[in-house]
Length: 332
Image (cartoon, rainbow, N blue to C red):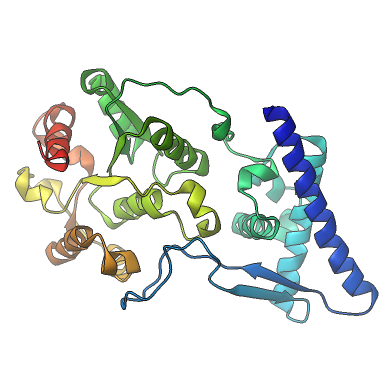
């Protein structure tokens, strides 16, 4: 059944590719400059009036690409080259990485981000997700084909860094606390986010997120909860709105008695990033306790890593900090 559905999806995408390229060729054959309209999406804005519609998955407008503008002409050239590669992958039912695609025309693409943008544009035009294009990732992508997930876990814990994941593994945290621990090793890739969403949907468990107390840790948290701006068109399949911020909070430095040497000064870039995040609509309209913690970070001008809690003991994170945090969230 899954094989038939996958084959049907490929056939549908190949049909859409043919229709798209045929429309461009038809325009060129009559001397008309092709116009490509690409829907635009966003998952947050800086409107603090409460009148924005960022929580909606609908398009927030369209971008018009035309050969009459040089920058658009190059972008369309890249888009069509990548589309041709995607077509070949689908026809042959093979997978290729984004890096593979880049090296097929490095002089034209010039940078990996150019390919990434083209792939996003193609997903919007074809109304599909990245994995449907057979553009592969380092880990399995067909998480929706995972069946019969069973677990005795009581909650899911997402940690920012692999070093923290290894610390918890060494302390046998999962066995002692009956939970599932996942790490995206920094900013999470798409399969990690889709797998997390699948676990939450199938197991109906609480999900908590533990990140460094710095603006980048907070941004990683919001990527899990709201999705990334780059992938806003696919946010409904990637975001996990149920996720709760477990820590580390700026207020934790005093609450858990972190000594001065564990605290690092915010850089100018840290401050700019934090100030920009404070303007995001979801911090204006909801999650006000998140906003207060970010404001406290700016006020104090310091940050710290999760591992700083090891100043008390190597197992303080697993035996004291996380359990106490979960008790507070659950109201125990």
